[in-house]
Amino acid sequence: MVKNINVHLSKDLISKYGIKSFPVRKGDMVRIVRGDADKDDKLNIVGREGKVIKIYTDEGKVVIENINTAKADGKMKPRKMAPNAMILTKLVLEDKKRRERLTKLASLRNKVVEEEPEPAAEPAVEEEKKEEMDNKEAPEEKEGKAVESEGEGEKDE
Image (cartoon, rainbow, N blue to C red):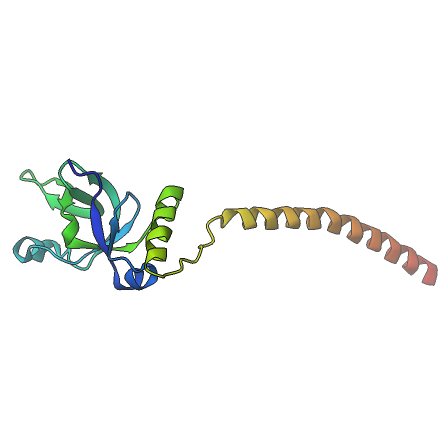
């Protein structure tokens, strides 16, 4: 049984992190770079990208979404692929340990990993709260100004 399945990184990830391979996880984006020309001529999977949906560590295979093979009865089933037939194009770094491992490996190769803005939802929540506060204050101000302007209009007449 294989503990981790390492997959080669794309050129831009190699230049960013300084490492050539990294363990693949569910959710990572991969591009297929190798395949059997006879089988894949009909399916044309070489060059396609997809998200990793399952990893078989006991077999050392990876399943990618929308990459299927036809069964004898005509039904489609997910295709198990070897990790040497693909390259990682995007890493999922939600796991704290995985991010730390990547930054540690990059620092050994004198690369600095910039922290990507993860909590994109939190600033949106803060903005919504600010907007709600503005909306609560704005009608009161508008009503007050409207009353004052009506009163001024009556005085002029």
